Length: 208
Image (cartoon, rainbow, N blue to C red; front, side, top):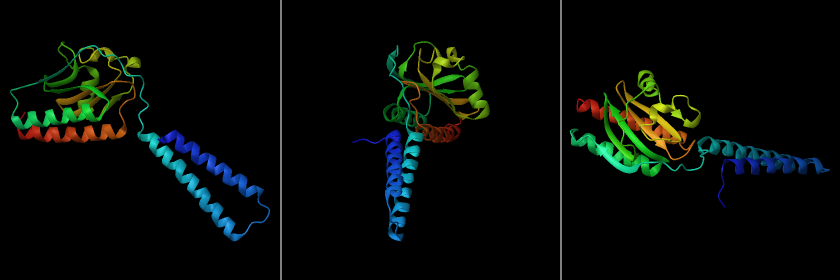
């Protein structure tokens, strides 16, 4: 049986209610019984707490979108081998270990990598991407359907349900599109953000 956050919260709540009902129905209360009741209550609350922690890291993903485009892999062959190998490894890891459908890495006016479901159109960053690198903050668009600036990403991947914009430095960023709404977890975001720091170090080392 597979447990998720909601089921753990429900189980914990039921156990807590049962132990309260049991305590009320007992006529003679002994010190041993009191200790047992306290331990049972603590156990139930711990289960509820674990359930809330599970929910924090669970994606509330919607239905997988039928994205238009071809699965391709493009990269700037003029980059040093160290940069190419790192970007190839990292982009493959993101596409295989998260709900990402497509990834683009932009540096100083040039799209140096595109992988996954890609558009044949040239992507140019707009207000959202530029704000991300200006503020050096990850921007998560969990549902692009309700985002007023979604047209910015049409040439990235048309009708992409969710997007992460991850800054690398003040002129470079990673753009990641998800198969469905709300499909990226907090741990996904943290891992990708840490990878962006590694990319920045490699780009700086190679003076790119």
